[in-house]
Length: 139
Image 1 (cartoon, rainbow, N blue to C red):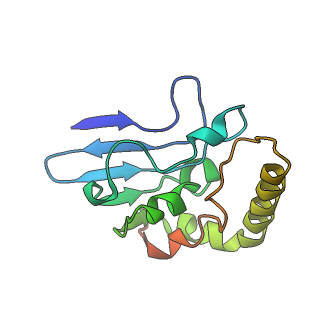
Image 2: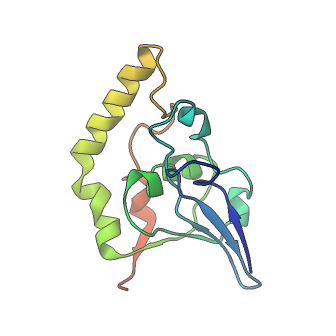
């Protein structure tokens, strides 16, 4: 087994994203936004490393934005594979859709002001759309 850190690490605590490779599968664990530090916005792009075609599935640990926020970016690169999550994780972005939309508006306002609050363009629409392909699994 090989585990590659593609997110939180090196002093960052947000942006959780790990690529786990075994002989049977290549799985991305989480795909989260970097938040709260100067320069974090530059990190909010599709995970660097494996291409979408190399990822067999995504497993989400929970629905916080620092664990699911880059799913739309991953989908933009062509990832169409399964996303595995608990029923509560799958439901959370949908249930929190309005706050996520408000956050997207706040992000856009900050970007339009020329300031960097740590989130890059391309994440509008929130992760809820990407969660539509999530497969809920009880734990």
